[in-house]
Image (cartoon, rainbow over all chains, first blue to last red; front, side, top):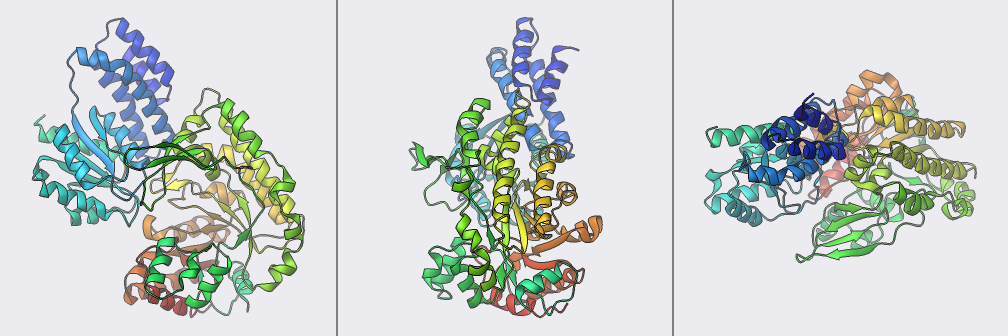
Length: 215
Length: 375
């Protein structure tokens, strides 16, 4: 088994220490950092994403896999920068104003990062204006908005309205999710995408970025 | 019939004179709204708790018969709890606060929502052994007010006509409350493979002994009640197989204890999509699903009844969101409740706490109408 397959397998198993050791070893032996990222870390995370979607693994397995991927990524980052590797794109993600829940948002973030997309995580209870500022500063093309409460889901619309008011709505694709959110609600507030789970959100974000950038 | 008798009969597939109007409390913001709208006195807000005097007073005003969560128990949590203290203050005014369970929560000023989990103390075996395990020790004299429970029948049970429950605690939900979802996940897959099981066992053993001590005082209860909240809209927060391996024996031990004390109605409060965990509960003696969150997660009770037959009972399943809309929406939900009630072994109850925006007059109307369901 090559390094990439080995790394992917350890990511799937959530073995963070082993992932770090393997990435270090692979780099020292001259393996390409892009390959270690796409065929190793990201490949492992994508397997976990698929399994999560099919209910074959659950939140803990996703979290430990994401931790393993992130630890590996920390080792890989300097080598990727040196090689001039670029992320697929950028996404701004947050839980909207008035809502402190972050498990769903964190799962989406982990899955999106597993697709090679850089995530700007604004945290929870985030103002619409803060999202607009983050999009302007980062040039992100994806905005992911999470809400767990029926009382806070309307704040997703506030963000969309703020993007329109700032004149940048057509520069981004807005994805919404969270327990009370439905496709009908997403249509109603003018979001571009609604997805049922974190793995599907990552898939959609990747597809949207590729479409937007003609890849 | 008393509420106690009709509840017992419905949950044992026997005849009852009518359906009781049962609820599961309110978000405090709703009570504040109702007080502002002049429906209730502001004093009800102070010291409101499930099954407490203010709750009972509100039942009489609105027309409810009782709150399902009318439960008693010893102290089956961490004892003493961790000191609540501010760990860090942030420039935006939010604060990281250590709570009684050893979780560091980030609290934003003015935000009414469950605080986000920022960090947690139970990171490894050393933290478990030194910080948590001593707080899980039995220490029974401090955990159980024996005088209270010895007088329970004459002072409380015989003076009320509503079903009263013993709270059996939680096998997994409380562990999640001590570790956060993230910490729970990391501990489950720690290099020390025995660690997570040891945490679950230590806490469960203490909770069993507390319940046993309460029951041995001779205090009477109509039902027993677990709390879990270990599912979300995608299903369980951990694999059903792992859940079974860690928890099944503890449910069985506690439900068998209840059976020995003549309690055969054992409910479990779990939000979210519970379908995948149901077999573990049903096979280990839990028989009442509660609160069956239909409004948010879809209709689960009929599916469960088809799957497990009359081994599954239900309290809940009423889409509380119709109480924010209009009479027509309430009527539609009442029709659905009639259909579920006809299955037997089912008592409608709003599928979680009533939330802000709920219309007082619609709740009164619902209470009047639900009592008309013949059985």
